[in-house]
Length: 160
Image 1 (tube, rainbow, N blue to C red):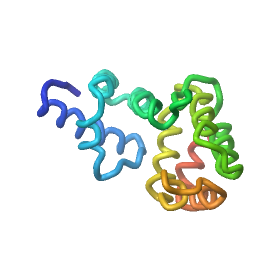
Image 2: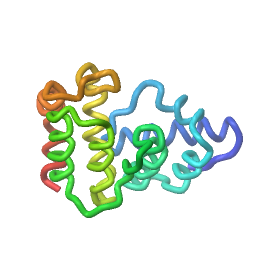
Image 3: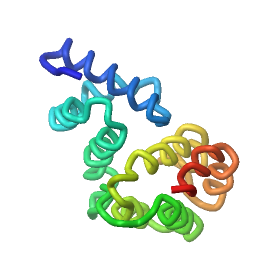
């Protein structure tokens, strides 16, 4: 995926969004436009990642961490499994914990599993937006919806 100027950015972002989909990530209809308006560092990261699902996922987590996790964390850098991270995020939801709890879960997962985490997180946000989205309560309703609507994505994560 090359880069260069507005046209190059659009092509890069369109290709990245398509690759994300091929990696199992649920992307919103505004994926390409959000990408083109994102930081140049994000687009450079996407360009370097090419079609590597895990590298693309790490680009995404690195780009959103400053906003989603202002107290730190949010970028996979640990050694936890996807199953352990799923349990961690579910516990954060059930306990009504602040965003920093989920950020710590994301930071604890092994970076080689970043795409698996992005797949389950994107499914929760797309299919359970009312209970798991930014305006949702992130409570047990989020967990129930996620377990029902994202069963295949979760099963793949738990198998890691």
